[in-house]
Amino acid sequence: MESEKKTIYHGAIYIRLSKEDREKGESNSIANQRTLLKAFLKSKPEIILCGEWVDDGYSGVNFQRPGVQGLLGKVKAGEIDCIVVKDLSRFGRNYIETGRYMEQMFPFLGVRFIAVNDGYDSTEKGDQWNKMLIPFKNLINDAYSRDISIKVRSQLQARYQQGDYVGSFPAYGYIRSEADKHKLLIDYPAAAVVQAIFRKRIGGWGCRRIAGWLNEEGILSPLEYKKQQGLAYFTPFQQNSQARWSAQSVARILKSELYTGTMVQGKESSPNYKIKKKKKIPSSQWIRVADTHEAIITKEDFELTSRILAMDTRTSPEHSEICLFSGFLKCADCGKNMIRRPVKTKESCRHYYICRIRKEDCSKCQNRCRISETKIYDCVETVFEKLLMAGEMNGWEILKKRKDNDSNFLSLNRTLLAVLVETILIKEENERKEVRINFSCQDFFCEDSASRC
Image 1: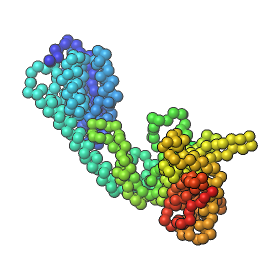
Image 2 (image 1 turned 60 degrees about the vertical axis):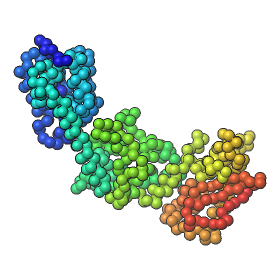
Image 3 (image 1 turned 120 degrees about the vertical axis):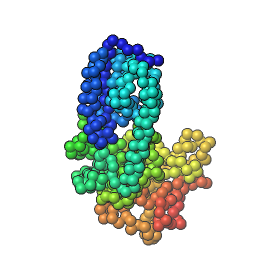
Image 4 (image 1 turned 90 degrees about the horizontal axis):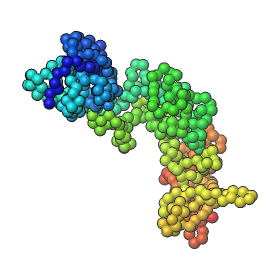
């Protein structure tokens, strides 16, 4: 049904400018659209201009735009009954949604809709041929958005493959090159903090403890550091007036392969041009290009940190540091993690490890082993000493650099375990407890790697 003409309309003009339109020049600019629409309304005395709604920098493929939502809210409230736009593409480029508003909702609500450059006025009963073309124009506008989306995605993929950085803001520790905005250079003050974070994590510190140390030292968080550098960085997740380091922000740095000099991009994408919500891409499909910029962290340190992070390294409430064997101990029967449990007496508190599965349901695991932390420590230390004395650990060369920087490095600690050991299997057989060490590298091999206690 066509909307019948009224004596007076309460009108609103709607203006939209997308990022793609801005790059094309002034023809679709905000000022140009406003001037055109106000000049048009001078020839329509029956329309009283009651407001103006603008969406600057928004795509027309969906209607989740603040300006258009505010306008539609006034329409539903009965305050606006006439909408004037420059052309149909300004209102929307989604064929289905635009058609639904024009052919169903606006006629039902008695709203007059005018697209100036397309010569469309919903109250004009003549020129039926032009009105028949309107759905096709909407379809063409939709196809235009699809074409632009395909071109942009292709350009991004090409940039990814070349190793060009296309993010809005460089990662903490890097800045953009002034000569080429798609290249990264080291930001040395922030890079020193990144290196300190990796050293602390390799040294056995947990992410929460590292974050606490950074806050105590008064080191600005990545968000506050970007603001200090004059970058217009914003995140909706900030809860306090000044952002502080957290375990999550530390973990993000420790997991970023970017610090090894490898550009990693394409981590998320939207399903299509009409859906803007991003979805995560599996890490196996990320686009990696090595040696695109100077590294802050060596690949060896990053791989070691990744091994440590992959383990079950939750810090217990009564400890500030991660337990030595956390993540390494496995049940030889079911392969699940062993869990640490305290046994308190009046004089002391000793810790024992038991199979997690057997503790929950003894029918699912037959390994009855309950072994003290002290015995495990003694067994592992004895094996390491024997292998070192026998000279059978040929791969020990990879530890020399850290040994030179840390005089206590050769003492049994989590870093040493992460470098040398894959798992430590615990089993009880014939009333004897067995600790078997599986080394993570074939260079570290010894046939007598089982210790009994």
